[in-house]
Image 1: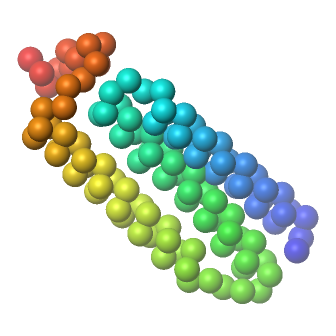
Image 2: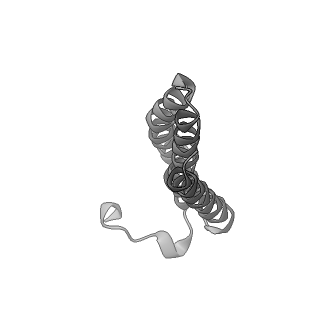
Image 3: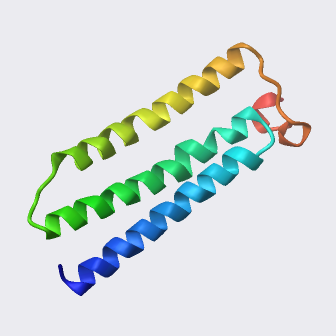
Length: 109
């Protein structure tokens, strides 16, 4: 494998790991349910997407073309926003309370 591809794969792995770490930290530290939805759905999705892209580059440089990684990416980017939207709507239906500092948004007036 060429050195440039190795560096690109390493950079994508580090970037994906950083996004996954930030998403996990947000899930742990954010104060209420609605804010915690953003950790797994935004940052972690980008992290896993970057890790899968690194896998695609690595195996395509080895001469193998894998459809699995592309399908994983497609299903991840289709299902994560949909599931987050459904979770938020369900939380609104059962009146999950927000932390005081997150109240007062324009749609609550």
